[in-house]
Length: 297
Image (cartoon, rainbow, N blue to C red; front, side, top):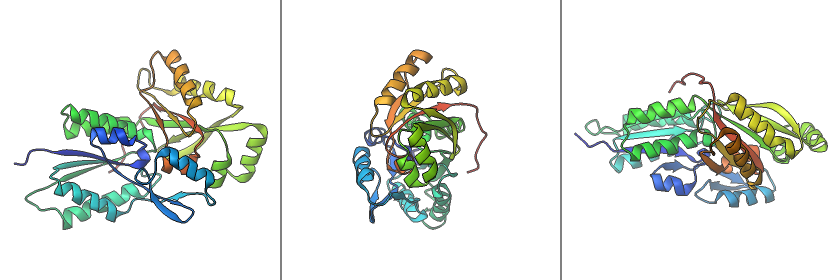
């Protein structure tokens, strides 16, 4: 019987810092990003900071694409050749990308065409259910569990529990990128900029909802703190997100630490995939709240 070898895999929309992914041995598939007719791969071809500069100077608004069944299957086959017996692949939420569905197709193709029956490799697909650190943090924690000797089932149980209860709240500090990406109409963006309004957005299960509109940056942090106090499961980890400028994120982390009695588990910057939709100037918060039920694989 082959000795169990487990590999964690995710994609770059998770926004896991490359250095941390490397340290924990997490394989990351890089999303394609198109900037002014040139095709790049997130993380592989530029850092987060370099992409903030690219998006600022781009003539056309950058776009992203899904990961294809072909490239996902290639990743499975590479891990198979490396001798892994189990792969846990946590994807970007199925509600926001076809990547999870493509992973299901790739797994079936791998099982039928590439895997030898006398040397199986089990592929466990987990729907991340959302974007950025809402699932990226869980992958990192699973990586730490794996290093401590956790079983496949223990990690899958943890990943399901976290992703079924994590939501992200964020505020774009300027509306010009949301307007360019089509997330906010040009008219609404113009009115918002004129009045100094900023939308406080919730993304749960990849569904974006504008919860509030606050006037002026001075009201952003109090509103995010209010959301954390009202909606977060008490004493659970929370995460602070930033874009190009992390000044407000640092302030948010300090206020939440004082209000809740403990600091954020992480403070991460968003990457290219998320930046293409939210813009590079944001402050955000990831919290755990009521579970929303399981998602089919």
